[in-house]
Length: 178
Image (tube, rainbow, N blue to C red; front, top):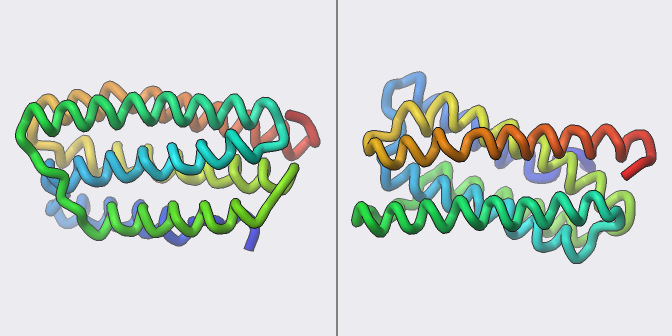
């Protein structure tokens, strides 16, 4: 099932976010906080594994960028929820993200070399596409607190940049490069 690593969780994430938005019952700010922290933690964990296991220097560099950037977002999100006295509220979406992240790590741990690099980057493309969709369709529109909404809007370009980097690496890997 190469290429579907964690895909079920990504689909659940994107569908749950979209369904909630379509019904006009988006997540609360506390639920958004849990989703944001979990989504970043999942990518940090995958990046940490990739940094130690990737074959390609470009993939290792990308993994390091994911650790750094997603770590910074989590630091900002954590500081904001502390400032606002909001406790992140686990929910179906954050739980599905965690489960998908765990499944992804388990699958990646079984791979090595070029197969690992390809699986990691393929997942990063799908993951960032799903996160951007959720940001645009659910998280940003549902955020009630202006500071939380501003943080989501502020970090969105970084997620777009990550997607583009992952797509470029994906293309290079498919050509036998990177």
